[in-house]
Image (cartoon, rainbow, N blue to C red; front, side, top):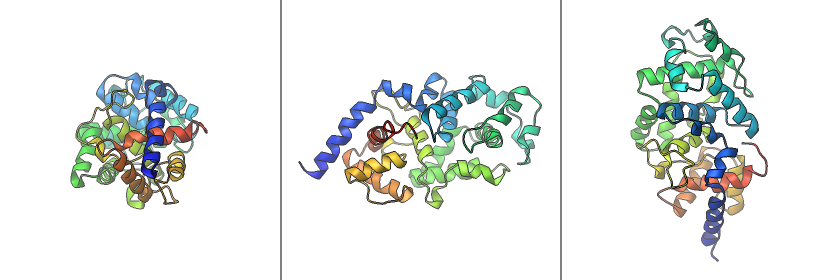
Length: 274
């Protein structure tokens, strides 16, 4: 068997194992699957992806808590409960409102993502939906600038961080210009863009083709990729993302990131962390 045939057979076998409905129950993607409204799916998917690092059970529990704090109606909560971003000075979001449903976010913590970070992210999301037409429009406009996911991530970050903010929030939004692998944002895009018969990913966005998606590369996917011989770069950075995604496009040009299930699943279920 040629190296190509061997690699593809392993990927296809792992794909069958992990790209199925049963995968949802053990993955953070279960959070947006709790919603039916497009905006609720987008917002819950984005916020869940932002905190998707560390212990999987903790990720899911904290994402569920975050949805509960938003009354399990994220879009309505953003529009009607989050304070006016126009009055935000970048220093004390907790002082913008005395509403108890806003004050509750002061105590939200997921690893280094704290209450201030959370409140800024909510403010910026509200700004994006009110002023730019929502997450899909921002990412799609960024993609259309160069027809690459790199330009989509680059543009989105520039918009999201335009409101006044403490420097600390920037660590939670990957910067591809600094060679970040942007694993969580690439995962978020996979969730919203990809669509297949198994119904794990949503396929809600149509302005970005699945063929353009980039692999959500983390330590698990990186290790499995190197074992298979489809990644040689040692660092898990954007250059590695480009290398391994190019290899996956060789196996399936129209939907290369379907193999995220094969690479990520094979690594993560041995470890239970993301």
